[in-house]
Image (spheres, rainbow, N blue to C red):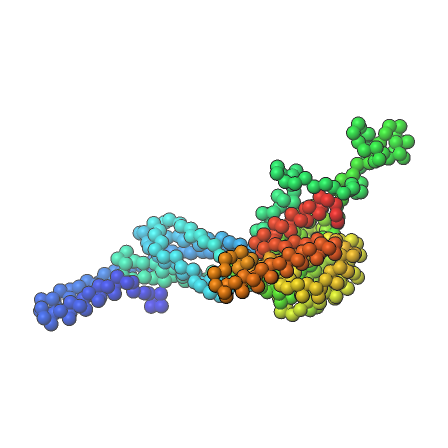
Amino acid sequence: MLKSFYLNNRFYYVGFASAAMFICSYFIAVLFVVAVAIVACLLIALLLDAVVLYSNKNGIYASRILDDRFSLGDDNKIIIELKNSYSFPIMCTVLEELPYQFQTVQEHRNISINSGEQKDISYSLRPVKRGEYHFGNINVYVTGLLHLAERRYTFSKEKTIKVYPSVMQLKRYELMATASVQDAGMKRMRKLGHSLEFEHIKEYVRGDDYRTINWLATARRGDFMVNNYTDERSQQIYCVINKGRSMKMPFDGLSLLDYAINTTLVLSKVALLKQDRAGLITFGENMDSFIAADKKQVQINAILETLYKQQTDFLEPDYEKLFSVIRNRITQRSLLVLFVNFESFESFQRVLPSLKHMAHYHLLLVVFFENTEVQKLSEGNAATLEEVYIKTIADKYSYEKKFIVKELQKNGIISILSTPQKLTVNTINKYLELKQRQSI
């Protein structure tokens, strides 16, 4: 009981006032009697307030409602349920023991709850690191009717959740995968050739392509029969993630590796919805993870669990080992979506030969990041000599990024230069474009 009993601020205010009256009673004697009366009334009121608070063993109940897994970089909703079992309205303060990764304690003050009423408190948390997050107890401080004493209730609601790559984005971008009609204002894309995946044989009607006539079926039936084709499916899509030190660069609380992981998860889901086979490769100084492309139902869960464990190596990645693994283990022509970060043209030149070798056997899409801070410096105005130097260097780095795009195009490699916040949208749009063009 003593550990859960606290004095409220009102008690100290009245106590300080009575202490001041005791001091003044040295000069005005009548104030001594008044001060003694105030202290006596204060103690009696405190006792009554404490009796009322402890008259109900379970005066309030609190519980925490949250998902079993959190989504990285998104706002995850948490609800605190409070129920008042006292026979009178109460005022309370809620202190939540949050995971140490957030470096704070969630506090909700001055919550008024009527007798028998249940009230919900909702708020959001945005984790910026993958891993396990441990939620601690819920502490509720209930104030008495006279606001002189407080009673602390501690509810053991410890729970460990895992922060996975952005699961919320999966539902957000499903519509982009299932849309079969282009929206107004979008550019019409010319298809190269036609699909060769057979669907069924049907009778010929005016307007059908005569080149698809099935002469064997026509001879058996006596009427013209044509082959009907559908969009080609079961193509292999591999997301290849570079875990080198350049991917550790932060942006808006998340590292570039986390942005690549979130985009990989969404792109894999979109590929599976398009009936393609999704796979995953992560590499650094050595090969780390390899998930063979497949379209079975558990594939997205396997990719999610693998992405959850990925961390930056702080070492230079080995592209020659990557090409060796791709050459030996991926025998069918596939779309390779390589997530990487080039901060200088010299670092790009070192890996260009390996990229050209990969592009010789597969359709290679290189996705790298635009440095938004450098872009801001490049677009800003320079007033002093120092700012002129800074702006000149920023212009140089911005130009090198664009020059890398041209060099990739010159070598027949498709590329995306994107800001981190637009990475998912730009990558999915490019995949759908390549799908529409039947480039894979």
